[in-house]
Length: 518
Image (tube, rainbow, N blue to C red; front, side, top):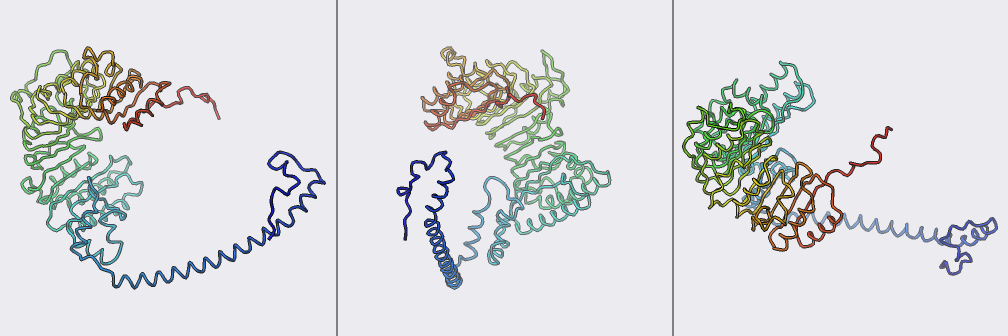
């Protein structure tokens, strides 16, 4: 075998340069490469032969392995159906209802083998929860969509039958209908949706957790035309029901249709323009739900009928709420609203609540213009609030600081509308900024609504709290540009173990291509 080496080449000093060989040198180079090219071809041929032999050996090995594995399966131990059933239950998704996806438990289990399918279908615990999507915005003709919904109804019925007599967790979701259809087509679709909802209501006696987040008109039409659906749907029937989520609905039906007195978890928020409780409606619900542990609700301030004015006195329809409503077990209360009415009515709402074990408090009123936070009456000297979510973008920074000063046990906070003054270290000594308060704060999420918050103040606060060994998470969205030294400081904080993330405005604010027409 001939070994070719650059050491014997007369062109060694020219290799790897931009030199271009002359005609005479090209002839010499061709003669020089003749033998190496022959050697290269011989080596390629040998490698090809060896690879062919290796491929044959691999195929032979795989055939033998398949033969062995197939026979070993006959003598390998098989889990008893009772044990396999318990294993299957532990495979269910955590924190949500399983979907109808074939790639997710429980449907996935029936695709493995016949034995697994038989075990999964005979395990009621696998079928006690389901998330159902009603595809009202699929861009197909109305008749085909009706067929899809009919098939889904049959699938839901089969799913629920497999659950036996166990309590059920069901969530139903549909987007707001956006496609324009003829009136008769919409009636077809609504009737099919009603049938699907009826099959859910037929098992209302076994409800445990129910979530209905649906198109407002679909839901309202079902209630009105079918008088609440199935005749079997009566408040007393749902003895297991403890968690209820109704979104985008007219809550006039709430007390009529659901046994709210026994609920421990209630969610009455909305994701569209429709729905919402009035101030007095919210108080009424809380007065009747004595067992609530968590409550989230949307308050539609426009229902109050009160115009925004400096002096506020409760109108006649509020006088029924002169007494305080005690929520002795409530640990989480989140109130949302667009606002736009009288800011004072929000204060009136919170002032009529007594929540001694409250741990998580949220208040989101986008158009709130009050000088003080409306929920201060809940922050008594002995309060144990550990989580606070404030989305009152126009609230003065002094009012924010006041809230924080009343929550000494705060562990997590989310603040929309934060300003530099809230994090000003220079003001800490006078008790005017966040550095003076919340010594146990571990997680802070802030979002600026304008350029009044920059990363310099945030990072100074983060360093001081990290040095104290408390703050672990800082997520922020700012409207100002990144400081020159910010990247290095963020890197240093991450190296200490802090989860810090700051989102800045898009960097195309001064693009050199602005205005260029292609």
